[in-house]
Length: 368
Image (cartoon, rainbow, N blue to C red; front, side):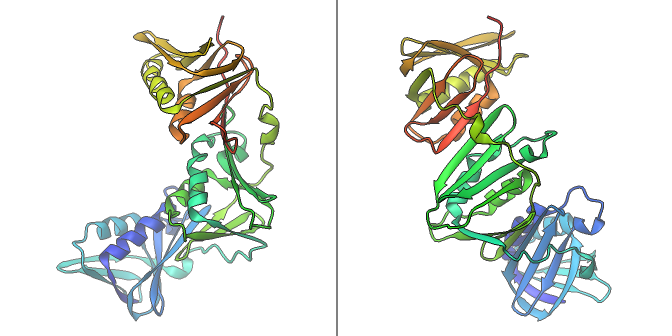
């Protein structure tokens, strides 16, 4: 194998593909990057067995071939190259030689035939979505995915497409983030739980252009995402997701409408003190069209108040400040609606007039 490629292009391709580079594996070859030189381009593959990313980049191919190069070392070396073009060659015994201007490096590689490939996803169900829409849905929900939970389904993000709506849901037992988008041109119906690690990788690879689309192909417990030049293969989380619809309240005793930026600043200041204490709490008190936000710890206390439009009963309720910070930092709107029933039932927060994006946060019980 021998090919010449622009160093910047190789570095960019490595940034894409190494998102799936294995950090802990029982198969040592997954510590490497599979390099395949074809007739017109070079294909790079990384896998951690659950997520596989394949990307292609144009290159001048002198001699086709395939082999596995040490992943982290090769990536760091390419990033430190001066620029211009680099030539990569491999001998019959899988010794790689990398040269760029006056720099030379030799690396011991492995046989590319030993690298496990994901196989073809036949696409029993296939949908095409705008990349900016899917990227936005991921950004609005992924922070609520459970990091470590006995229920494996909660460690993933739930994607459902049904009746012209695409819905993405994440919840960790304490809060939930949900976003819906119209996809009236999609006739297929599907539901899948995408593992949290893969959700983050997918979100980083999606583009913002109006003409950028991605094709999602589902087959049993596997998902293939085609991003035009990059392919992502994911082993889905198996199991039945929690019925999120049953969790959502349909009626409320108190509804508060407020300026989001003012609320964000108040919560942010209250968090400085709340995080210094052992309880990590922030208290919301609603009285006569005013919202009071308070926190305290051994080191001090904070009292904030702001105008709000209140409908219904006065209420005092407490939250883990981390979850409320996630809410105000991830919603994009001028004003928000906060909907409550009691001090011990969930709060629902949405952009004003938009129930297609919402956060649900469980309160913390406190002594009266």
